[in-house]
Image: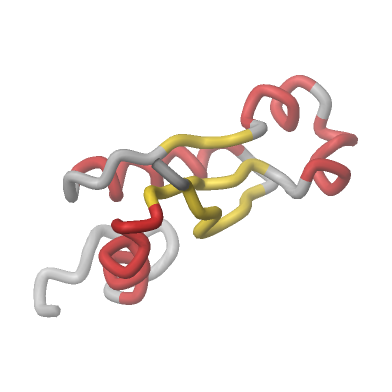
Length: 79
């Protein structure tokens, strides 16, 4: 299975919120480089931040989920 980076973060809190949002919609995903960035924040930009990775076949569904929500908000129930 091939995974694609959908977003990158410099902090683990919004990364986990977005990962939870995708998982609640049935999309299996993970955070790459979370431990590196959390343990040594000076490496954040060197490794490209914490990367939210989704399966290639779920990319469009994940993008649609984020398109219907604002950062830090609940999913839009009217969409």
